[in-house]
Image: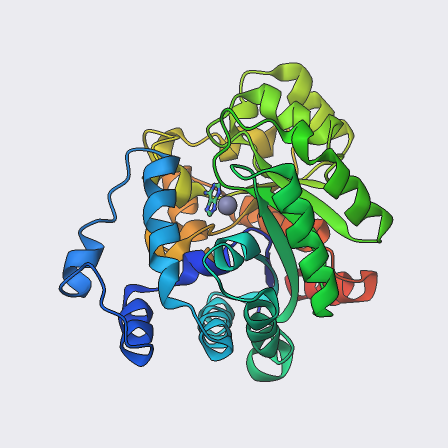
Length: 322
Ligand code: ADE
Ligand code: ZN
């Protein structure tokens, strides 16, 4: 079977309504929704912030180590069915410590599932702790230090949450520190913010990949820079439509960026909220944008090449497309 790498998925965004209700029951919590249908009826978002408000609220059901392990394992099982053989998952540590969950509890739960991902699901995996850009630089540094102190293996750090009005430069110190510690770096940019936000994460944070990045469209100099510097974009098509960044999938810039030579990859972002996992995203853009089999293959090979897997693993994953 052909292999994909998923490089942009928030574990908390894989929290399905069924699991929200199951965890609420297990933890003795009462949810502000009568049932799953009522919860799902809230999954209409005018913009990123409307989504984030519900996304953070729903996380309150995640309380114990096994809750984080169950969440992570459920994603890995579903991702494996989507053809994912390498998953570099985002985890919003501050969203849990900020409501009183110890960092070690959350991280060890995630790690329980990630450390078994290859044996259980045939998926190699890595953890990227995503710092929240609506919080302070001090909070980001504290979260980074807590993550390091936990001893849980980390592949890298990222930056997510509310983009517009929260300049990336504030997080330079923690990104410099992570890089000095040998970690990889990525950041969300150009999802709602304009192309200047993408330039900022490249220049100020020196990230290796840009998460989303679709708003570079129209900035020819920046697009040329992405091509020349071979900077991958982890694009999330269904997410962009559901958060109203793109009016319709047929108008999604993914195909134009790909045909301009940008290293575009396809990812699911928050699949429990946006209507689909990696396979659903690939199929949706294939249809909406008339992608050829060759272009689908390029997207998959881009995902493998843009991953932080070892050279040997990349070669093995790419060989499934030979
Ligand atoms: N956190 C979870 N999903 C996100 C998104 N699409 N953009 C920014 N932060 C996020
Ligand atoms: Zn994201």
